[in-house]
Image 1 (tube, rainbow, N blue to C red):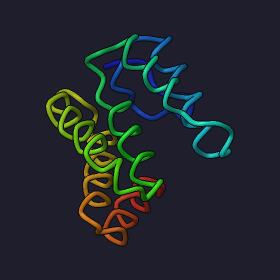
Image 2: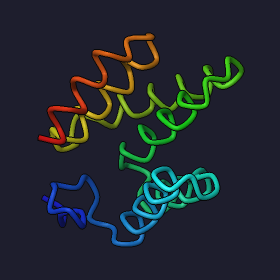
Image 3: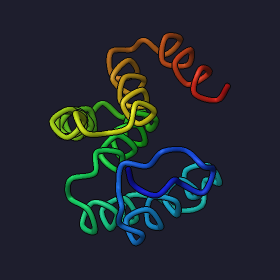
Length: 118
């Protein structure tokens, strides 16, 4: 298993640069400081087999609620699904939640995220 993330959770990559880029993207998403897309692209370039940056990109794009971004978000969800077999359960749960958001099932997605937070 890869090294844990800064919160001690299992992480689906062993690449420190990929983890650092994803953490920076997460910080941007939570602080609303600039867009996380370049950081997520960097995370994917450091570890093309890591699904979580695709999940994060899809989630970010869907959070913008712009109909024109749905296709791009769907493509990232599909790619994440292709990479998900080897991912830790926690990351697969994030994928499940973002897929629910894509389907318009926000409350169900929030229940999955609530469980992850507990």
